[in-house]
Length: 442
Image (cartoon, rainbow, N blue to C red):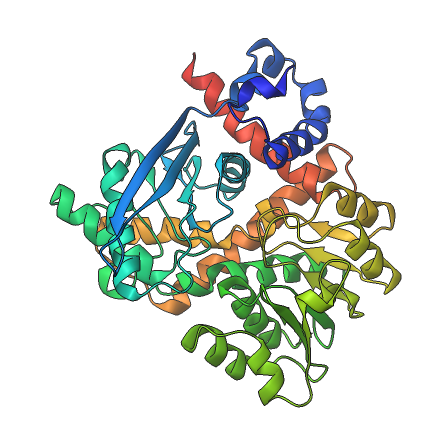
């Protein structure tokens, strides 16, 4: 099979990495079920259903016209309408979005919810932009492709660079253009029909998944040192839930550097710096004398956070951030578990090193599925006009994340995979999507 034919891009490194991981791990399923070969499911599944590329023209505060690229990869809708986030970041390109959309198919499938997989975004950088510029860009972005989405077609969500503010602007422009209040985007601010618990969902869900896994092994997070990368929404709420579980999270990071606070990250200070001031972690180091701040430019070899000895590590920043060198350092420091909070943050060589040293590895498509799970709850609440209390949403999130682990573990047992949670998740997700594709015909 020529994987290059599944893309028009010459450099699809991330996308091919994601495909290879899935194809290698589903071999036991294919060997037992020749129907997937007979229906040519693999080749059908690695081609996106639709790729949309569009130009975004908008006026900045100096009344100068700027131009950005916009994309939406509607990859697979066998299980339900496309669902996936929108990312605003200079690194956004077709390769990254294909990989994210492909991963989203399986992440969404293993939740047991009826949604397909998609991803989109723009190379627009919201950092340093005024609120007015961000609003105008979001309006131009939505205007450029609003007729390609819909509540039963494709539902957007937040991602890197797209928080509640941006979601509100995107939703407002869609409403203006269509004169409808359709649920075409999730992670909305509460006044626009957002769900309580959505902001916390990915970080909380990561820890709920991890705790269920550890309980199954007779272990717990209580009293354990944990390291995290990132300091955005996922990392902050993962830290918050780790404290609830009695763990001790001691690191976090951003694009400029990393913090190690041996007494435990000061969550209130972290939220103040990142959520209120939108400032660098350097200020954490200045205000908290117990903490060590290391600038990224002064550190060679990945991220400083992985040098710190820990029981569990949670990469929550971005894709391919945890490479072989960082993984080796974690192994040398006797890490027991790595659970991914970001999308594919661990490189293949890093994963292989963890596997060969019996480190339990929880892949993103399972461990960080909490965000999309609560997004579907938000869609349901929008449709019914009946909104749930935070405690109800949080309980449902715990049930979903616990159910994901148990379904994957049963799959591992069925195919004699031991604790290969990557293979278990891929087989579970692939089987659900493939069976739906077969049932729908060609």
